[in-house]
Image 1 (spheres, rainbow, N blue to C red):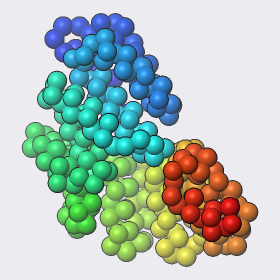
Image 2 (image 1 turned 90 degrees about the vertical axis):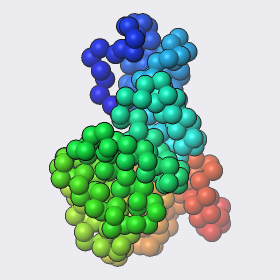
Image 3 (image 1 turned 120 degrees about the vertical axis):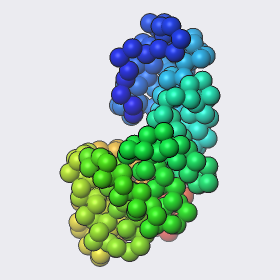
Image 4 (image 1 turned 180 degrees about the horizontal axis):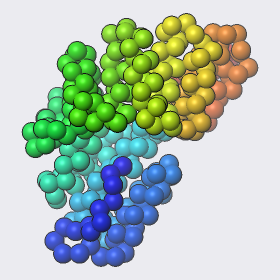
Length: 273
């Protein structure tokens, strides 16, 4: 989520009620109440249809809803980012945000121009390199992705997301120890980084350490209670240790969060449910 501007403007002052709805919606996004966030920010952009920042922030809420709960699609977030860019092409963070959304939607060829636009305008923009690295990673060009993540981290050594992404690229190359080192760094920067806990858990699975994996998946769930993948991953680790009841409980929890989740549905069928 972007930092709130101190004087939100387009041409003239933003009406106070518009900013109040947007700010309230952003607070809901931070709390993980994404539908409430979308509802509030929709009020803002309905009152002021040219409020670029509002469309961008609604895109952020929709993006995080899809990322964390796996409900909805990436297209609504992309549409809001695109509308915001149309209204204000100078909001540079929108290009990174849309670029990552394109990558998550497997539209990597569309992501690279957005990310490169950020780098073109701000050559020392850490987020731009991270964004482009994600796109290269999606194209399975892992070494080019790692080079962009290296550049992102060199510009901003506190960029935990870039460490997480580089860890994923190392994992794809089967450099498991390197991936764990990157996840360690990401967690040191943000001790509530549920993505890095989940990914480090998968790395420990690759090393055959189910107990440490379960510990990381549990942390991922603690900090991301709606994180379906973490429940499924922990269930598989429980199953590997012969802890059938706990595995079933986690698959059921995943289903309760997202009934369309194929992994938990299939596994429960295999267990006879």
